[in-house]
Image (cartoon, rainbow, N blue to C red; front, side, top):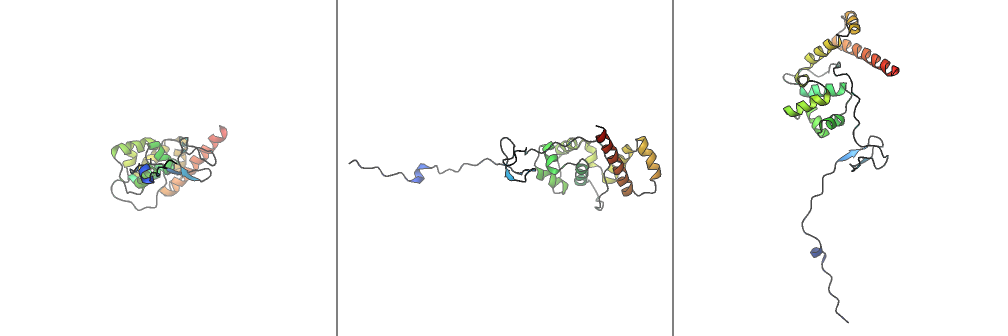
Length: 191
């Protein structure tokens, strides 16, 4: 009988170096709420729907923003401007981040005042929100006044505004938002 060679130890057979695994983003499917790694096809493993954020339907470039209950703060209010404009355009943080090509957490940090965007980020934010970059740098009362002036160029709204002079700015904003919603719902029914 020939001698049988002794098996090699496991430590000799495997490399001792660790290889870094590629980073994979964890995402929640909006359809079935399954938490999973992103796939190469960007399709949910359970419900087979797309994992990519939906592109929002474009709306009017300038819309009226309701007043926030936060006390006025001195200086630049980029955080408030980004949050207000994102809400007016019915965008989630994830959708805005997808438009800009940045992580959702970056949008959150900007809106919470924990990060101040660079000039190039401000430019991308402005393009993603369909506004001029100066709209992100103006204070809230100035933005509201400018947006109201644009809305009042409409003859119908200018006529209605004459009768709403006794309302405070919050009541005017609510009233004008309702009028805008009515006009949009009418155009949807006609289409």
